[in-house]
Image (cartoon, rainbow, N blue to C red; front, side, top):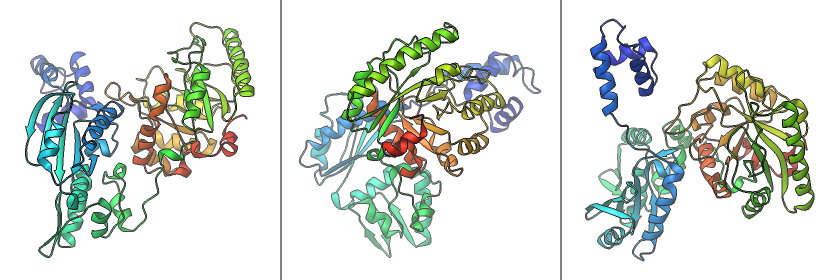
Length: 477
């Protein structure tokens, strides 16, 4: 269809996605619009059936694959440096192809070594400076090679983002320069750069961390030497959204590992504190008294661990459902036994903006809730965020000192970086958690940190960078 037809459909039906269009077509809402009919409605459905969105992989799915390829490349002595590129280096929540930059004076040797990687299904290209392959899992991998003296230019150019690079080119043109993946040309001379720092310095600005390169003000900040020092993985001192195998008869899925296994994993990560936060018992299958008794029994077990486990602090928490009417799924007598509560929406995600906002506000205003989990409810590649009045929510979080979670689970990455950035304007505090249901998932903390970095969050903005003596003040301990 043409742009006018698309605009007419989008405005009349209030469409926000292709899934919205499909839903309207299937419910026969298009045929009743002026200028449309049953035939055009059917044609739209057929086009949607044929259309396939480009494959986007979740960042944590791609990351280990890229690491294996990088390790393979670095085994070759002719490889001086190897780094990821594109959306992977910028730590975007979803990634298309994997692109890798290599610094080497022996490109043919590198390409030969790269195309011998054991997971390759098909070699697409083995050129002078570029190699391209398809892996057995279907992912496409491209390797680009520059001499070490111009590696910084290659790294910068193919890291992107597109909009970031467009803004850089505009800046360079004003200075009568031109930029490319080979360097910066100025007054007829090509200036090459081994590293990105020198590249940005030549343009008169600070180096910008890859996660921030989205043309959302980072270039202007770098020109004024006013970039924030964003949070790093080493700043994190604990993880408090962790699901165990304790038989709490939860409303949702149990974790795989015991309390003790979770605590030991947290110790191995050098955390100062850890939160045991299983889903609360299901309200449809338990009476209030049953829920209270289960919490009481679980609390006794955790209190025993607090007394016996050394070198780490333990929080007795639950992840509690925010029900469709805004009430919490745990009675007050149960909440009072906990060190604190994480509350989140786990049902009725399609409610309207006003209702979703009211549900979130009810939890935020509860004296028993300290953290709102995965605030937008999105599931990457599966479910879009629900609508909510975020400015109102951010103001209320600041007023009540309720912390918003940046959930590092692979299919969530929620709060999204765009809302992290917006929430910072309201001085909202965050907490980065892994929402692990398996202790191996506790290693996903770096992906939550990446979301915070993309949202320009600093160490001071994230609660679980605090030492225990300060962090405990957020809870009932």
